[in-house]
Length: 279
Image 1 (cartoon, rainbow, N blue to C red):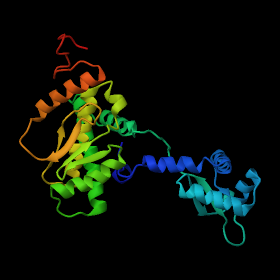
Image 2: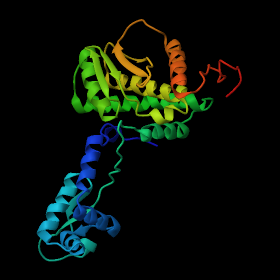
Image 3: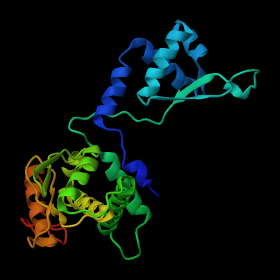
């Protein structure tokens, strides 16, 4: 499965989803939206107006609100493929928008796509966890490269790297908080519910994804570091330094995440450190 990095770089934000829901709070718009979805074909203003029992002018007003909210798209076309004399009428059809509202924002879809890609692209001799980490890193690199192509920032130093990163990660639900010019903490983990089931795997995927993003964005002097804190994302972005090794940080992350989610820390062989038995 090949992901479209440009599409992945701009998921609907919670604010946009809330705005879409607020548009549907109006009874007429909700009825018109439902009618168009059920039609399974492009619908004209006149048809929508007739179903709702209102004038075509009022229907056009409400339909354009639905278009502005990203729930419908419009174009000029002949409904049913029937050619008529004169200008083609404006028709409306549903978009592929999937409305989900969660505060704080959760993105299980991103994690699911990574795991599906990992299964499909697992290499000979590679275990499932290694495939997932490799795929997460590649997915992050694609997102970073897409953002770099979009913004064209030129050479990035540590501070500008974090400024650009902050904007992108906010769109992915991480709730970035700038602790210092070269330190960015992520207050929310978009994968939190699933991290409760397997903190070692999910935190590892999260770390690989963010590390790959920095690589794709071509940042300089910034590292993605496993720095677990209760109630926060397990990864921080900060100025590069000679701190813990990746293995040491991963072990620390597993221990803290395991305590937070009520699971036992796991060593590199999959045995719990407390019992020595496979979980």
